[in-house]
Structures are given as structure tokens and as C-alpha cells.
Image (cartoon, rainbow, N blue to C red; front, top):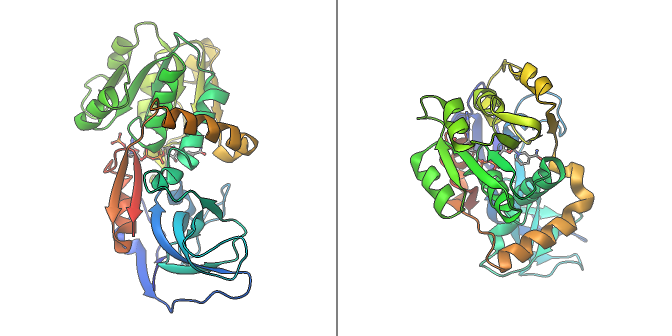
Length: 330
Ligand code: NDP
């Protein structure tokens, strides 16, 4: 039974030797417990924050203890009446091939293999983040111009599509020409810009948004966001979802530099974590599911195979190795 632990706190960009694989016995399920076999593991940028020894909205990971993330697992033994052998469950579980759980935080998900992994993405945490951050803070309306950074990732690709469904003009910022193509073809963005190759990103955003930017859904922070904020309209709304460009900086430059623009434009910038909207999860999931079933919403996944590749998949988030949701299949 392989178990991946954090053996060193990453300094800067995480490295493979920050992680170690231990071997443990396969546990057995006591009364009230289930034995789970991990089938799909979600790796997410927020895990980087938990690898630092600092206060946040969730406690840091402990050294030499297994890492936890969103996981889909199969019930292979059950002494809990809520679960039967063969059920698939979703939970915040450990990076272990096998583990037991008392089932308290587990949710049984439909077995349909076509949509199983969707519960880690579009129908799970990242889809809810996209939908609720955009609709509750961005307040999209027909005719508004929406710019999304980290646009080809798990959250960004859903933000852009929801923006289109709600009548916005949508422009995505991403880190490769392949992803630019993905955004404008599969996800129907109106335009997309490669922030790595644009000589003048602010100018390129201006050209793509001749009427200015009404909503900026920010996944990345830093310089890219400053270039967007240079182009905002009066009363622009800015859901601040993440700042992945800063997560590996020991001393991130805190900004933005463009505070005077925010003042001049009476802009609203609001940070959030998806849990802020927990009482709206059921309604939001219903909407996302209905769009998905009607073919109005689609999603993309990058799936690495093999338990040993979980750390590598996690590291890949920081060099843009993923298109859509990054998942590891065990
Ligand atoms: P993604 O699927 O978007 O994966 C990360 C992507 O970030 C990479 O593919 C890469 O795309 C981009 N990236 C990596 N490094 C940089 C950099 N230095 N500058 C700019 N872009 C970079 O991850 P998620 O969709 O899961 O998460 C997106 C953001 O949303 C993160 O900031 C995350 O922390 C945040 N988040 C917030 C939540 C909340 O509750 N507030 C919940 C879930 C996520 P590219 O090739 O385009 O550079």
C-alpha cells in the first residue's frame, strides 16, 4: 500500500524530492468504516499553500504525513450501512492506494464512467468555483466583456464557457498557442491571447477588448493581472479567485501596482474561496449538470496514469502541463 508524504517544505517551485513514497499495510475496515481503493486523484494549485508552514484558511500539511486532496475511490469493503461494495465515493482523502474512512465526509457519486472524473472538475470544486465566483461576484450580463486569466485550466475553461452562456464577450489569457486554439475552438471563447509571447500584453488585451473590460476573473495575479486592470471600465468587477503566479514566491510582491486605476474606475475587486458559497452548491451543481447534459458546456482533462505520478502531475500545474483539469488515474 503506497502512501505519498510531504518530506520537505518546498522552497520556491515544488520539486519531486519534496515528496516521498512510504509502504504501509493495507488497513482493514472496523465497525462503521469502509475500505477504499483510490481510483482518481485531483491535484490542485491550492495544495501548494498547504505545503508552507503558515496560517491560511486550511491548516498546513504536516511533514512526513500523507497529503490530502479531492479523490474518487471505490468501496472495496464496507462495515458502514451508508456504503456498499462497488460504490464510488468522493472525498478529501489521503494520497494512499488504500485507506479506511468512517464515511462522514464521503459522498456517493453516480457510477457512470463517462462522468466519473467530472466530479473532480466541472461538477466538483473547480466547476463550482468558476460558476459561483463568476455569477456571484462578476455579475455577468449580456454584452459585457469578460477577461479570464488561467483560461485553459480547470476553473478558467468553465468561467469562459459560463460567461458565453450568459451572453458575455469572452477573452482568455493562457500560456501556449495550443491552449489559445483550445479556447477558441472547443470552448468557444471569442478570442485568446498567449501571455508568454505577447510583446505588449496590455496592448493585446486592449485590441481584443475595444469596449474595455467589464469583468476580470483573476486566476493568476501578478503582472498579467496588472495588464488586464490597465484596461478596465468604470465599475468593473473583479472576482479574485487565485494568484498562481505568486504561489512559489517566498516574498511575493504585493500589489496590485495599479491601485489608482481601481480608484479611478470605481472597480470592485473581491477575493473569495468557493466554500463561501456552500449554501449554493446544490443549485449551482444542478445548473452545471443541466448545461453539461444539454451539450452547452464541455470540459477537458489532462490525465496522468499511475499512483507514483501524483507529485509530477502536481508540479505540472506550475509549468502549464495541463489543459483543463489535472487528474491522476490510479
Ligand atoms: P489550472 O487547471 O488552471 O492549472 C494551473 C494553470 O495555471 C496552469 O496550467 C498554467 O496555465 C497556469 N499557470 C501556472 N503558473 C503560472 C504563472 N506563473 N503565471 C500565469 N499562469 C500560470 O488550476 P485550477 O483551475 O485548479 O486553479 C486556477 C486558479 O484558481 C488557481 O490560482 C487556484 O489557486 C484558484 N482556485 C481558487 C479556488 C477558490 O476557492 N478561490 C478554488 C479552486 C482554484 P498556462 O499554461 O495558461 O500558464
